Image 1 (tube, rainbow, N blue to C red):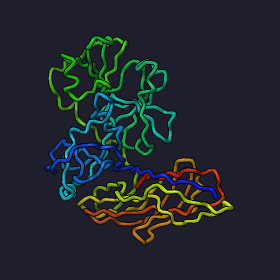
Image 2: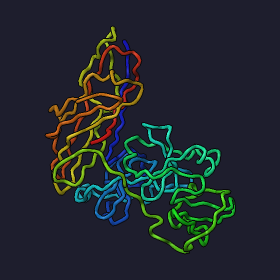
Image 3: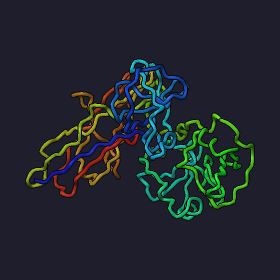
Image 4: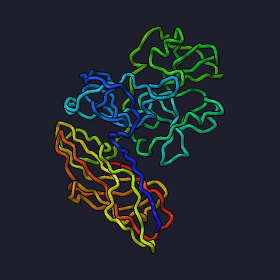
Length: 378
């Protein structure tokens, strides 16, 4: 018998919550205040983490993003600022937008186009950067600065003009000359000098992201002599979401359900022409509507990856409990689409609807060993 495994991933376009390893000591729940980093009390490691701002919870899509703001000297995420709030309190807030990578830290590529690299600037701007330009600005080992984000997260950013080799991305802290401890913050126009190196850390910049440079830096603008709130502020999604949803509600949050099925192995018959189990549960997704109105979801798109092909998926379904909500409209170029202009399903305001993705797996393919499905848009 030929066996193949299904592997699970979850990702979202307009609001994204991906698993992160969160390790903190148990503490009592406390009310969220503006600027807090929050999670829901009682959630286990891997639970969603949010930036609370203006009464909205803004999710960190993954640990790559989180670490550009909160990083320990050992390159692990710093969870010391995390505040736990009750589920009841969390439910009174509305969803915001994804937090994006901090400007001037990592370079980024996206999984659906790994050959293209971008520099990240303040306020969620990304700019394509060539390998030659990257080598000039960051040295021969520039590729070690690149983190890979899931393809749909590109829509969280605004794409600017290509990078040139004569200036760094806005938001970068550089050291010139290298080893001198003379630090400068590039605001997109001028290199503002820190009056002392410690002020860079005080203003939220991590030593791991300070760039030593041999490019001549001329100080300009006002020197940084104290704490400036704008320098340490977290950046929120600026790109335009393409995830279609209608209704009176202002937002929809999508997240992996805590009781999503574990990875499993399914078995083909001895002729390799059929799968023993049909309607196999792959993953469970929670859709949560904001408190100001119902949300009608008209389109859901899944992406396929792993060692597999589109033809390995015979039929893909969306289920609400035992009720079948939809069968796929199309499977093409690694994208599984469900669409219904009248609405695939409705999420009542202030509630969460759990939707299970189930699959009939096609027979006749012997090469598949792992199928990974994730949300492309919802």
